[in-house]
Amino acid sequence: RTIGIRISSYPIAQELVERFGKPLSTTSANIHGHPPTYCPEEILAQFSDDLPDTLLLDSGTLPARPPSTIIDLTESPPREVRKGN
Image 1 (cartoon, rainbow, N blue to C red):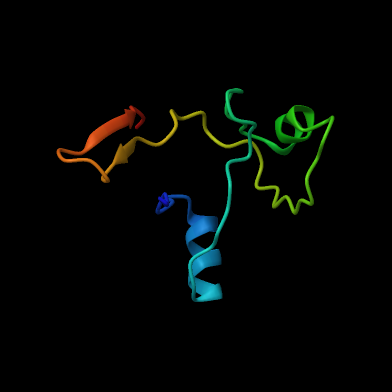
Image 2 (cartoon, rainbow, N blue to C red):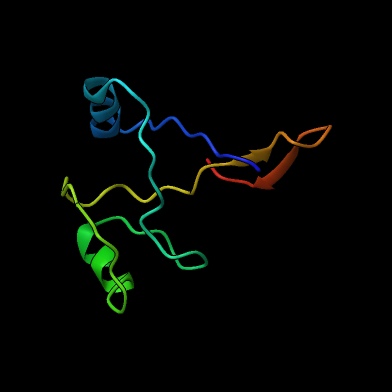
């Protein structure tokens, strides 16, 4: 019933979308309720028991940043679901 939309500020993600010419449908690289991951080793460790079909583009360790802010626009007034950066 709802969809989340995020525009990444990460240059590699922006270039992938630009070259593909369409939006990308992706998921977070962590299991819900687990800490964010910032490098391929953390992703592989977190999914060690059940790794989905995966393609990892290794651009090294990313800077640790808070998760994105999530705002629910299906309510009036809009409601902040998660405070991020």
